[in-house]
Amino acid sequence: MRRPSPARMVPQPVQAPDRYEKATAPFARRLYANPAKLGRMAKRKSSAAKPQRRPRAEIDRNYFFGDVLIKTGVAAFVAIGLIALATPFTLRSALADGMYDYIAVMGGFAALGGILYLSGRHLRREATHWDFD
Image 1 (tube, rainbow, N blue to C red):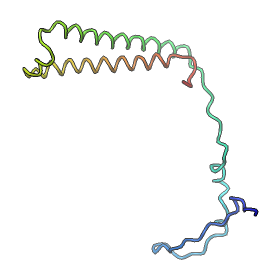
Image 2 (cartoon, one colour):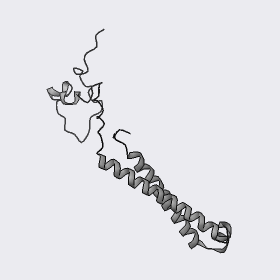
Image 3 (cartoon, rainbow, N blue to C red):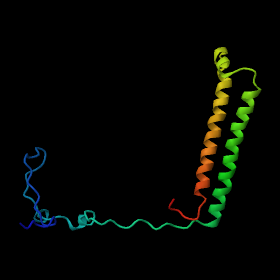
């Protein structure tokens, strides 16, 4: 049995009428598929975009700032570690004494160091010649 082409298939009539819509006869052009929409129904999609080479200045800038941000994040973690070693109390005793400002400052610096380190790693990874990675 030969099936008709999808472009020639007739749409099925609506079973229940819409009470807000006027009763009109279907247009003759609605009996066939819209040729403008056939491109989107195609099985083959367009090919992916070609990778672009990054300019040398952008590569150098990403590498430099990525390196600076990584080192700054590590320096923040080292500073937090040294401050934690120099203080004569532990985190548990600071919580017990209600030193929430100390914990907030240490947590803020830890968050800042983590954000700087991760953004530096991202920039260092972007410091390549090609744009597709």
